[in-house]
Image 1 (cartoon, rainbow, N blue to C red):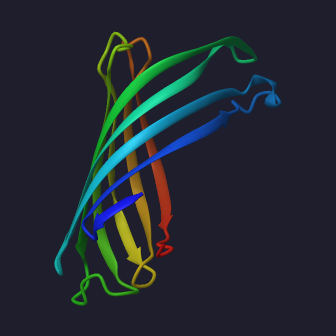
Image 2 (image 1 turned 120 degrees about the vertical axis):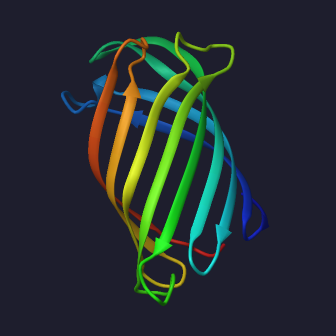
Length: 173
């Protein structure tokens, strides 16, 4: 991660992820490898916080013939993700430790690049919840997440309602 200042960051990474559908042992797992680059901008004021980030991802996903057979090949695709997250304190103490704030977020995923599928839109994630400031640096975000996702063929949408809880720790590196 490269840190320009407290409010602006650029970071990148490389992940290897094994996924198993849960119906059979690990023989039906498939692999996803991806690299990413993210630019984040944070605005922190006494009465509200706003975070924006843009992420470019390149993914290599193992092709699967059915739930238990890998095809032995990979599909390469690219995604652009944009996230906006807004917090509004519910206490006169602002964002002090042990206070609650309203949390609103929206993240959109779009396909791009030379391997573009037959559709650009992938998904939209809309979040409404709360953020609890555990201490000066760490917080727990919990609430309702709605995911609208288009299938790979681009012909149908899946709408998911999820209760989400995420703990954010700042290790101070």
